[in-house]
Amino acid sequence: ETGVTQTPRHLVMGMTNKKSLKCEQHLGHNAMYWYKQSAKKPLELMFVYNFKEQTENNSVPSRFSPECPNSSHLFLHLHTLQPEDSALYLCASSQDIPAGYYEQYFGPGTRLTVT
Amino acid sequence: AQSVAQPEDQVNVAEGNPLTVKCTYSVSGNPYLFWYVQYPNRGLQFLLKYITGDNLVKGSYGFEAEFNKSQTSFHLKKPSALVSDSALYFCAVRPDSNYQLIWGAGTKLIIKP
Image 1 (spheres, rainbow over the protein chains, first blue to last red):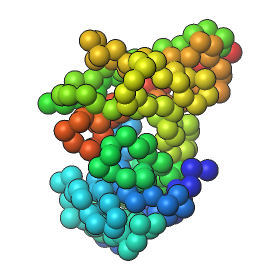
Image 2 (cartoon, rainbow over the protein chains, first blue to last red; image 1 turned 120 degrees about the vertical axis):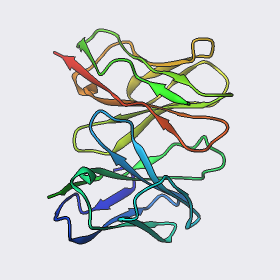
Image 3 (cartoon, chains in turn red, purple; image 1 turned 60 degrees about the vertical axis):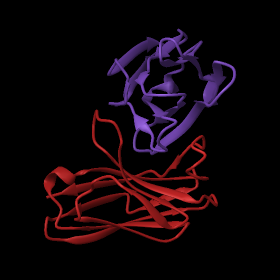
């Protein structure tokens, strides 16, 4: 257990559905991240929050909408996804961002399949 | 463009033999360097990092990595491989000009009994 939980672990959704991914960290960290992991590709950073404020949006399509109500919780709202959005979505947290040398702690991921 | 390369998609090692997983990078300045491991159906786990100081850093599960500034490399090593080391290994680099990590594509390590 890394102290970062994600639900659901698996999700199958149609292109017209709306769903949300949830992440919770119990480590007292101030920064949280959403990554997309596709096979044999580098992790793609999607969103970054530091002290609940979004600090990065890496040109992610608007069909992905993040929400960070507090430093412990992070959501990723999904709507009208495309089949190419099928991937493993990972949440991570770290103590801080500006220092740069803190490692990230990852949740187990949500395996998303878009049909 | 800044990048991280893991030149081997897969590395096969016999149990008990030493292992090396390679990582080279192309970033400006003095980066921070990280290794993570991903076991099947799990998220990534932090193994070790280089920030400054001694070029040889030791991490979890008996792994170590050597920072070589002139070769811009940060290879992961272990003296004696275990079957349980079989997993996907990722190298990541944080340039000193940007807080975002640049990730390699991963190397699948297979340890055969």
